[in-house]
Image (cartoon, rainbow over all chains, first blue to last red; front, side):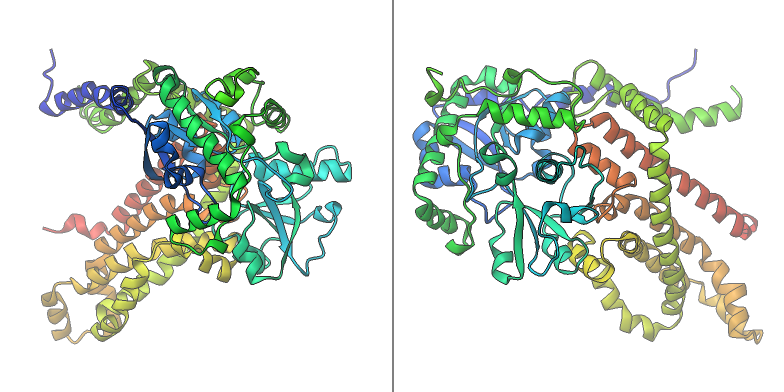
Length: 333
Length: 254
């Protein structure tokens, strides 16, 4: 028989012990069960000027009131929220519903529990901006042009697609114009240097409008009305199962914050600016879905769109994507 | 066991074990397959992309971008490194600036790259160029500086001209280190691709990884990542072959 060398033996040992170190992620959630306050791990926001409701809830004391101790875990790029929550390094994540749907279709065991933003005419989810002097004025002017976006898929792609489809009668808008990837934070440079003709933003980029010379070509409100911009928070399914009370408290804190924000916009800017060390007029507001209710129409619409543009292969049952059962305002529905 | 088989075993066992470990972690549910798919599902995704030819389009474009950036970087850094290694004064003047450049993150420089190179093909190669410059430059400088002064002095005592001195003494002596620098640069070129193709790309391996990640096509994403790794290994292999070929004198050293 061949003798096993020391080196190979070492490899075997490493191979055997690795699985043991990989499943420590669930520990924090379990020990939270026994405490008075539930610790919930929430990502920090990547956008310091846009109102982030968990910060606001923290400032207003709504987390404490609900019995939650928020732990902010640092900035996680929106595209990694699903991965962070699935891996158990965060308890909640939140991004546009279409990304969450695609994540769930890809096998992520997560579920949306409370709504965040909702599109209104004043507070769209996305704005597509051109230079003031640009010749692009009508939807058909977009044909053959370059549209700068920071990421592919979802609202970045579908918003201009559906704008064209609805207002020019083109059946398949794909390929009618060119998408150009622009790294986050470089949108304005790309637009002003003429590298792209149009650039897509989430929310309303106040600072760029202050510097002037730009106008809004269209936003998601003109495309879909209020159902376009849903960005609900989601949790891991087994986290929900183990900690229903923690989820209920988190949902309660977020709905209270959302409703307060809708009714105290100017005050919200002050509170938020103080937390972020910014000037209140730098803060971009959002409109929050009333009572944090996740609207089935919105989920359904994005399900249909992701199907139509081939991001998912088959539809997922809606109750696998979201639930309003932890929201006290949804009782009786 | 023949020596050849034995060496094959030594070289592949760690890699094989790594893939077996990865696959079993995913297969037996120790990690969520959403985060780490099985090796087989990744291989399937790669196979699908090979059948449609999509993968090769990405590889070809990425090779073009990295190749261009890398070659230009080498053409600049090696001659510059030789000059800086030889003329001490030049190095004293330029070194602080180059150290600042070297330690400036490419990611943070995106606005500058857009401003100067736009979002077309040039900007991607420019980023690769930037990343590739420094390892080969620094290695070339230290290679030239590190040539045994005794060799130089004895060559000079024979009344040798400077061009011949370079050709016969300095370059051969510095070559191993220069080649190491070039190999390090090639490694950077492949790694930096992902960052470079975030600038206005619609094709290429780096873009594809980003794209697959955004669409949660996780096996596709890993297929892209492993393809880049394999590409890097192949390039390194070729450079080692080249090095053995042009630095053949090393073998005759005592």
